[in-house]
Length: 307
Image 1 (cartoon, rainbow, N blue to C red):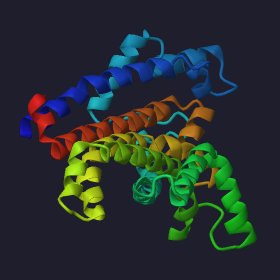
Image 2 (image 1 turned 135 degrees about the horizontal axis):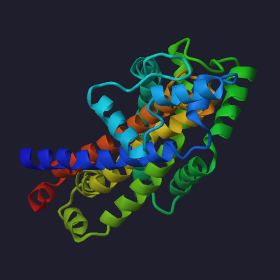
Image 3 (image 1 turned 180 degrees about the vertical axis):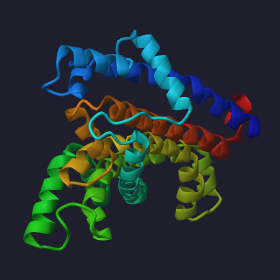
Image 4 (image 1 turned 30 degrees about the vertical axis):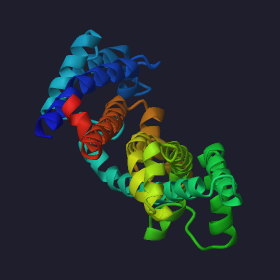
């Protein structure tokens, strides 16, 4: 297991380097002159050129990328051109709301999604199955921003049960957490059902039933256990998209998190913040996939030995 872990970890290093290069080049393709934006509207051409030289924007992009990576390896994410603050401190102040929101969305969506999928598979072609899949299809089809506005109107404006936005209390996480987790719940429900149904057709399931085992043990101990690799795969991909999904939800519910900060940075052309946040999102996605790979090795030892 140790060699398998080290090999997977080392494999993420060149991947992150490639991702960082692509993000850096993509950001510098955004229309607009960053030196002009940093110098201000009333800056003279000489002041704009001085700003360009001071920030190293007069050098070729490949040299700018090398300078950025050198600072990054030394723990320096740069300085915000809009606020003048350290980018690292800005991300730190916004990280906790986004992390908590993602955790709330993840916990309920994975549990409920897998539960609906398993129950629908057990009750296949019955009204419970149709109801479960109706919920799943609705969760995928409904736009999260529209769902958020409807929930705010119902539970906040009309009933007054929950806050319309912000994080003044723990109750502020309920509506945005529900909206953020709804697509994940729907996808997990559909995939858990299809994966479980496929495994329940296998010969070892008929063998388990012929031994007189209870149907609940056959489903949970045999069929569902062998479906875990597929479920973990889909779950890992959905978790990787949580931070990206938070961009919309945090705007709807005015949550001061990373997603909202990214939108603000894009509107102000704050390149240092945009670069840092996109790198953070990419790193999170790569780490989630690494964890999924390691879980493969735990769930199925053959994978470790073959790699």
